[in-house]
Amino acid sequence: MSRFKVIDLFAGCGGLTAGFAATGRYESIAAVEIDPMAAATYAANFGDHVHTGDIREWVKGALPQADVVIGGPPCQGFSALGRQDPNDPRNVLWREYVNALTRIRPAAFVIENVPQFLKSVQYVDLQREVSEGGLLEEYEIEAYVLNSADYGAPQARRRAVVFGRRRGQNALGVPPKSTIKRTVEDAWSDVPRSVTEVDLPERSDGERGPYRSRELHLTRRPTAHSLARYAAITKPGGNRHDLPDHLSTPGWRKHKTGSGDVMGRLWWDRPSVTIRTEFFKPEKGRYLHPSEDRPITHYEAARLQGFADDFIWYGSKSEIARQIGNAVPVPLAEAVARHLLLVLDEQAEAELDFPAQSESDQAA
Image (cartoon, rainbow, N blue to C red; front, side, top):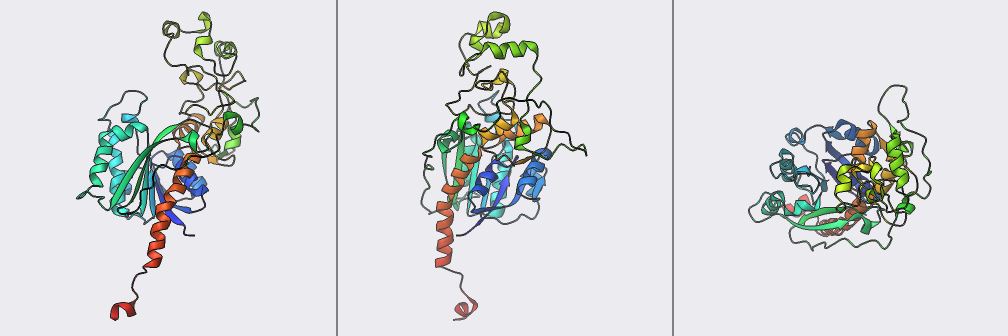
């Protein structure tokens, strides 16, 4: 079977690449990531072929050729979290993804983003570019909103996935869902419930890494007030509404409706909520352990994202948390990668059936 070369743009720590690599059919040959710690994490796991810096500089150079380009351009300006700003300068970085496609001309590409991307002006622009007369008119795209819990991840996380394929190839359709539904308990079946580590293990050279996932079973130093809050939320599924007044806040007491995830406990028998960059702060969401009076750890969050225990990380606690929270769940990425093989294998087979003419053929 053919193996396909992949370039990962806006790569982060490599969640997308990890899923593609898990199929055994793809080889990472290049990546671009502006955050130095995330780039170090990527390089440690997938090879020292990462451009650490601005993609706008990278696309000006000599670009490697690849069969597939993947990536998730920054989405802060149209994310459902916080203030949506269509003029956020980070939004225009998606254009560099398009610029890279025009230079590389891969057999296929994948864009991953928040669901709101499909209602953005950026997506309208992408549709224009793959139309007749556009910069990418030889491609067709199809887009779907997928939930990682439907693809073997122990986490509910909705993401927009745009598949790009050569014009004239059969549409891919929605990737088939997994028959296996994994829960928090499935993900943590062999993870110790108790936690003693608070800080990252010290390195003799003072470097922020390498750390393997299993070394990140770390917790915060909660105040007595926080510990009392955790203890007051006694059952899985509980949240801020279970707090007595003296442990609540004026805002929480005033708003009896609204989000039930704040100060929420996870359920053992369900997938987790979406793992975000501040999963170690229960006041930010449903990030209390199902039965222990503590937030979930970096190790537990990495497990919920599908990262292997020997995955290597670089950075401080907050930097690694940001890498974990920003990543694409690995099982979802693997499902996308396997689905993409339908068009890649079709194209590879067509090229074998119609090889380029030899010099003698041309002479005849």
